[in-house]
Structure formats: structure tokens, C-alpha cells
Amino acid sequence: MNIQSLAVFCGSKTGNNLLFAEHAEKLGELLALHKVKLIYGGGSAGLMGIIADSVMKFGGEVKGVIPKILLEWEVQHRGITELTISDDMHERKRIIYSLCDAALIIPGGFGTLDELFEIVTWNQLTIHDKEIFILNSGGFYDHLIEHIKMMEKENFLYEEAIKRITIIDDPNELVKYIS
Image (cartoon, rainbow, N blue to C red; front, side, top):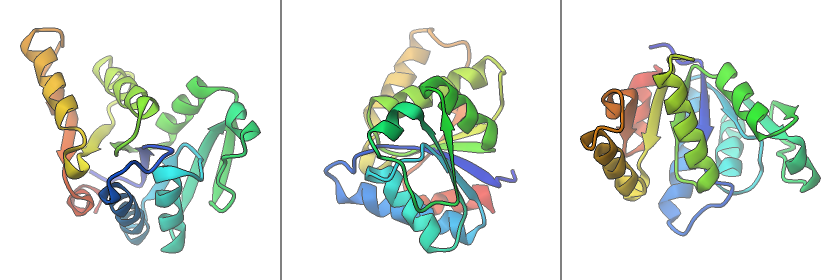
């Protein structure tokens, strides 16, 4: 697999566990060192800001996509390579998906889960066939992974869901997929 651009979906907050921020920073460094462009939501706060700052700090390239409504809240990142403004959240996701070779989900809230499930659904419907990774920092997604297995066990999924998602526990595990 040749990943040249990676969409990262994550929180606009940092959460309580310091490991989340450490992993976001390490991911940014790894992406920059392996010349993988970061495609993300364009924010400056939380894990979004940490990963973007880290990619830039290590000389990488960052493309943010932010909807107009968030510009009004002035949360856009002003120190990244390129920022695209979308009309709304739906267009934002569509643009991000179109620009990336693969997607990585790290800790976040409802928006992060929305992005995860939409990209998995699009994969399942063959709208695209992008590799999807979940960084399960400190077991953050343990319950979600179990729930996905339950959906499969109860026959609500059309195929084995986990075959569409690669679970990693540490940012360094991503290197074998991007290099």
C-alpha cells in the first residue's frame, strides 16, 4: 500500500488522558518524516491542532478543510500549508475523503465517530476502497470495537466489519502501512 495522504479524524479537544496528545504529536512527526500529507478538519484546537502543529514542526505538509460555520468561531488553523473552506460539514467530509489515500481515527467525540462510520459505510457500499485505521490509544476504542463485533455477531452487517478496519495501539505501528 502506498499512502501519500492520510485523513486523520480526531477530537477538537484533547481529552483527559495525556496519552492522546502524545500519540497525536507522534503521529504528526511520523507523517512528516515519511512524507505523508495530513488531510484533516482544519482546526487549531485539541488533538486536531496538536497533530497539525507536529506535522508542520517536522517539515511536513498539512491540508485542512473547514466549514464556513467554524470560521465564524475562529477555530481554523492559521499555520498550516493549505486551508480549504467548505460550505458545510457534509461537503467537508466529502472533500477530505476525496483527498486522502487512507483514513486514521484517533480519540475524539461524536464528530469523530460520525466520520468513522461514514467512511466505513462508504467502503462497504464501494463508493471508495480506502484503508481505515483506528488508533486505540490507551484502549479508548475498546468498547466501540466490541460493539462492532456485536453488530456482526447479531447479523446486522453485510460482511466482516473488522476486515475493513485495521486496529493499532501505538502510532509507530502505522509506519509499516505508510512506508
